[in-house]
Length: 493
Length: 95
Image 1 (cartoon, rainbow over the protein chains, first blue to last red):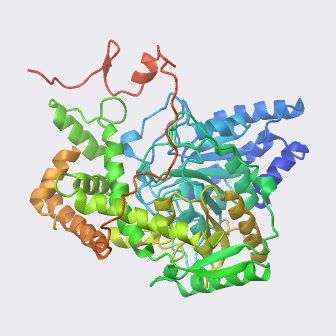
Image 2: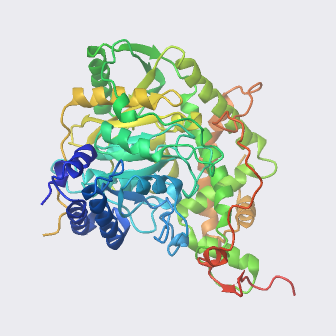
Image 3: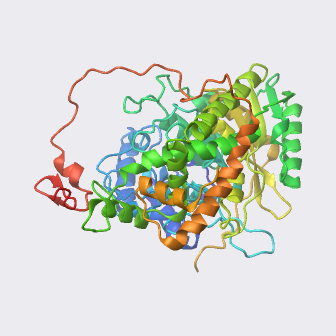
């Protein structure tokens, strides 16, 4: 048995290369763990046959010294990435039988580097949610629980399954996507590292669209180095995505430099919001003293329009979503409700195929884009977005990176916030501004709160400043010390 | 501004989403609470601000105008709920 619980991606890569274990043994160990972890509901589809055949190919290449960069590393993929001949649902009923005939650019990059696919991961329907509870396939469950409390907790969202699969050691790493915090918030809730790349760094081609001007991909991993390794494979220019940037991808792993003497770290006062947990505020202060002790310069900064990012987001994201989701018409793909009249067929198919939150956001988006309201809402939100982006530009004149908490609270009970859309939206308060400005940001596990739940610190970088985030993130990781694994309560005996 | 039941019905029609009569009241109140919350944006003066439409400042890449695929009818139709003779099938539109 390979002790996958205590191995990170880098160690797995090294273990495969120095032949401590075979790709097939490794893959079978993961598949076995996945099988025992049904209670976590992290997977929508497991692909054991594909995994085994890919692992055999990897062993074959390793034995012939023809290894590719990530040969034999078992990954799982958020079910928002289209995978050729493997069902891709986006967590929605309307796509429950959708089988793409093409591969997303990012997953194609990963397979070309030799990774092995274990399966497709649970997420909020069309990535719209902060708790994984809007998934048609039921919520994924956080591997972490409060001390002396058996209540199941949400893993965060929308990339809930991606965070659970790493936290519960069901995959060496996973892919995720982030429109308003969907990588960083679940990473923070599950004690994992979540990186959202700069807008344009990773291709969006073949990733089911939610809000195209905000959507960006990234990995969830156990460590910062793992995140650097994954991003290098995922990122890159793609002619098929007109917003992807034609810029070479640095070797993030070798560029990690733990000497952060003289690095200027901005601390924005506006992120000290009402409702920020006392433990999280304390943890933020710990983070500040860690970086100070390593020689970084801490600078108080102001991002004055921070509080307006979330309301502006809840105009822009639904507006783009209402447009993107117009394609689900029951004609070319997706579920259809059969009716004699064409309009009735459209409306009933969409009503039946979309869940409550998705319908609400489509209606909201249609409203803010409709004649008579466009200027008051959509245009106003786009102008606000400019001010938010300017705030960051000004701050980056004086700092190299910004540090904040990732979320105002730690993981909450399943069902807790479901009845009130606005309260649920507040979860993304500290993550949304980054998407509005298209910046890279990473969440790093930084401690446990009084209940024993993971907390995360967010580092925000300059456009294409991922290198800095990996370097400073590694320092936070070192200062924090070893991060524990959750107790494996989910394993069926 | 507030979203009354008449507006809910109108945007549901525009969105091609069927909603039942008993959902309308609930949706109207939920959408109103979201709208009321986003209206805090009116606190900001945006008179001379240029709206931000993209995060990307690069000019779009041009490519040669050539056919890069084709003969994939089966692929295109493979997920369609109803097809016939290489076409998507929809309910009768013209009487």
